[in-house]
Every structure is written in structure tokens, then in C-alpha cells.
Amino acid sequence: MGYRVVIVGATGNVGREMLNILAERQFPVDELAVLASRKSLGTEVSFGETTLKTQDLDTFDFTGWDMALFAVGSDATKTYAPKAAAAGCVVIDNSSLYRYDPEIPLIVPEVNPEAIHDYAKKNIIANPNCSTAQMVVALKPLHDRAKIKRVVVSTYQSVSGSGKGGLDELWDQTKAIYNPTTDVPPKQFTKQIAFNVIPHIDVFLDDGSTKEEWKMVAETKKIIDTSIKVTATCVRVPVFVGHSEAINIETEDFLDEDEARDILREAPGIMVIDKREDGGYVTPVECVGDFATFISRIRQDSTLDNGLNLWCVSDNLRKGAALNAVQIAELLGREVLKKG
Image (cartoon, rainbow, N blue to C red; front, side, top):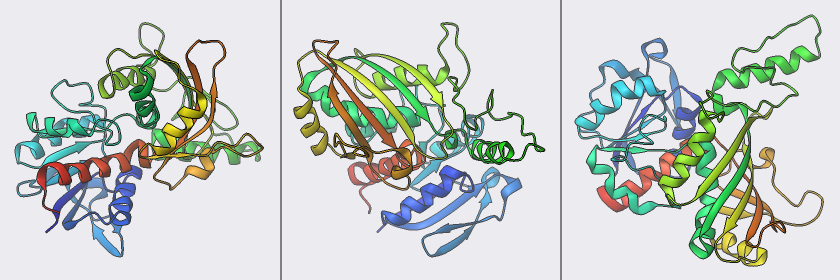
């Protein structure tokens, strides 16, 4: 016996990836509904060997459905997620709307699976920000061993994190550079993204940080430990898919780089590729389409008594969004609903 599952936002990048991952991981689906806005009504999407037509989100009745994976923006989520939850359908939301609500669990299954039982307060579970998701997978096993005091992280985030518009803008601007008669001014980003990097993701806050940077701070504290201090600089780079992070960690107890490497090799969801030679590390190009969070360049930080550096890469459309949502659905089914 499987589950009746709804995908909300099935025609977007993340919604389509959710469908791919549900099929790849053979999630026990008895019935599947794919929803979209009226402008995309009837659009066909693939689920394994099956082709499905999208239904109208505005008129859909969530009664009798087990779970709904939301891959739409905060405005649409604010309207439709409470309706689904009130109808008894557990919402797994990929937007930022509910991440900071103290009554709604924010879950990365490799990190805080025990939080799944808090879903019943509002029948909603939040999926973290893409940059946070891969980082906390790397931090948690090290925190369990040596207690992390402080994290300094710089991100190198692909354009797919901003949706299809970001992908199109990078592609169009790249082509335009080789065709001087064509001009593609920035629309999705604040400056040219092709052959450039932009130290600005989301809006600026009063303290000079951006909201993306604030998200990494607040979400790490909620998912792992409120005592961890985090400072982040988030940068958009001209990469289509795959987020990278340079992470500096200060721990309370000394942790040797070799032990850290062994700990990470044994940790769930992580693949360590760390050879001190040309190409002995993972870049975004190699991580695309993979389920793992890849860790490379593990080394001691000689400027701290208890410091480590590492390089973290993951497919942001997967672990940073769709994969984590499906993993939450698997956890919900395994630990709570227990039908599949």
C-alpha cells in the first residue's frame, strides 16, 4: 500500500525534479496529482514512464491525499498550503514561508530526523534554503564529535537557484558576448552574470547582510544548534547547476583533519573526494544529477587552535530542493504514516 501524493508547481524546475526523484527512488506512490497555475493548465510532465497532465491548483481538493510537495513561491504557498493542511494532507514546503515558524519543523533528514514528529502542530514541514541544506549535512557529524562554535562560509551559488529566468539570462548573456550586435541587459540579476560574479543574493538587510546570508545563519541554528555562530557571504556565479561552499569551522574540541575525513566518509548523504593532487576534488559540473553532498579539500586551519577548512558541493536542484523534499516524504512515511 502506497501514498496519494500531490506535486504543487509540477511544471517548474524543482517540481519536475521532484517527479524525477520520486521515480528514481521508487517512492511508493499509489496515486499522483500534478498541479500548476491556470496559465500552465494541461501542460504534460513526466513521472517515470508515465506522462501526466497538470490540474488546476486553484480548484483542487486536497481531501484524502496523504502528502503534498510544494514547489511554488511564498505567495502561492501562503494561499494553498493551509488549505491542504486543513484537509488532512501533510504539506512539505520548499519555499521560505514557514522555515522560521517555531511550530513548523525545518528538516534535513540526515541531520535532524527526530523533528519529523513535530509536523502535526500545523500539518506542515519546511524544506531549508538550498545553501543551508548542503552545509548542515557536512556540519552535523563534525558537531556531534567536537561541537562547532563558529562557521565562516562563502558560497558560490549557481543561477538555477533563481529559477528558469536565471538560467536563461546566463545563457543569453554568454551568447551575446560573442555577438557584439546583441545586448542582453541584466533583468534577473543586478549586474551581468555571464563571466562575472555577483556578491548579492536576495534583498539587503539593515546590517549590510543579504537575506540569503541571514537564512544560512537562522536555519543552521534551527536545524543543528542555536549556539553555533555563523557568518556568510553569498555569491552568485556563472554556473548553471550546483552550489559550492568554502566552509571554515571552529570547534570547541580539537579535531584532526584525518579524523574529520573519516567521520565525513561514514556520515549519511556525504561523499568524500579529497585527494591532494590535480583534480582530486569535486566541482559543480561533476555533482549535477547526483544525490550526494560532496566534500573535498579537508584541512587544518593553522590560524585557529581548533579549526578546519573544507569545500562542499551539491546539486542545488536536488539536495538543495527536490531531493530533500522527497527525503522528508520518505521519512514521514517511514516514521509517521507507515503505509508504504
